[in-house]
Image (cartoon, rainbow, N blue to C red):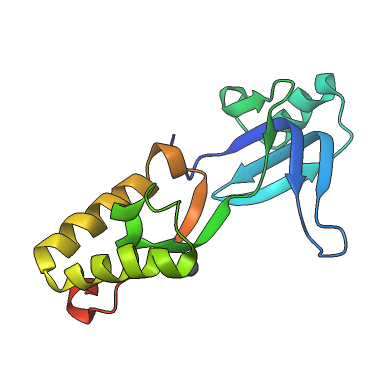
Length: 153
Ligand SMILES: [Zn+2]
């Protein structure tokens, strides 16, 4: 789908706008997007009224989707804490405390990142893994690198 095209959804929207009310659930809601911006958000809409609302917004009906029961839309997630060098250690060391894990796995692994070929291979893998399928719900990712500046560039 072209991200610039107009699109609209009808159903449940879950979002947060205030720490005092961290979760807001809007049911029977129409959200319309044009040129990557929300141009309409109307709650309490009957399903039969939703099509007319979409038509009034000049959004093609083929770009209108009614969410099924149990489906909902949430804001995109931001993962601000990916230790990229530790990708190679995923799933190992659960028998250790944090300090034991750091000594046995983390520090020796991160020392390998002076080898630029190794670093390139690992960083390419972690970016590919975190930007496809299993993590595509994230709109923004922040990676931590090793202390080796050359490997990070
Ligand atoms: Zn951390």
